Length: 306
Ligand SMILES: Nc1nc2c(ncn2[C@@H]2O[C@H](COP(=O)(O)OP(=O)(O)OP(=O)(O)O)[C@@H](O)[C@H]2O)c(=O)[nH]1
Ligand SMILES: [Zn+2]
Image (cartoon, rainbow, N blue to C red; front, side, top):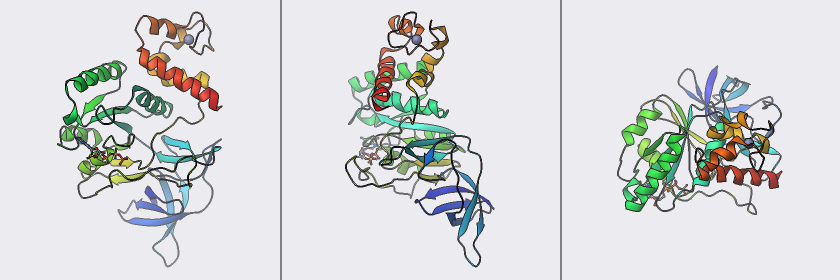
């Protein structure tokens, strides 16, 4: 039978079968992403083949269907390994806010670069609209200008007051959408509004710190009442880019990607090279300075980590 993995706890997988029933499954065999070692072979969003164990309602996954895309992150304490967070996504929403606590441009840019790297359409959901004062609304206009100019849709909502929720529902309908966002933006509150009766805990899950105990957090997939799936990433603070070579980073900044072939050197890093089309565009304002600063920050961060 074929089915969709909707929950994973490490050794058990909940699979939504084609027949509409749900099965607890284990895994037999090895499924690997080429070239990358992963701590979990299968993730939410995966299409799998499975068969029932004799005299049991439990299944054994024996086939993994090709993934359209997937998101991975570095394993917390096994730096050479990656964890697959979710597969077969249609889009990724980053929930941000400009009020308590304001999401930084750098954080947004890292998320967008990650989404580009995985080739998943991304959009920004500005939550807590009810809290934006005059200054907040000005900042909102500035953020919207920056991101809509380069083709990332921006939406405003208030999970608290229910503002613009029907609009968000129409974007989610019949799609598989990953929800991401740093702690405190109201991601859980928003998800609770979209999934009535589900009640996701707000404000208490935290990922293990570098020094802390190893805890693995798994993404959770929820069927939306109006069609489609929402994938929550509880406890996952940030989706990082895994193993991107510094010289490839420019590809993941849309507005840079379109200009890079005009650089004088074809291995241009867009840092200080003569004849760099990206630097020129930053100087004349075609590329937003904040975006370029995020590029440099990721570039140098990756360099020191390598
Ligand atoms: N004023 C206002 N407060 C909100 C809104 N959405 C969420 N909050 C509040 O913001 C705080 C954080 O909300 P959560 O839903 O727990 O945020 P989260 O992003 O899930 O954060 P973690 O649970 O830490 O991952 C809570 O006190 C919420 O009540 C909103 O639209 N307006
Ligand atoms: Zn260049």
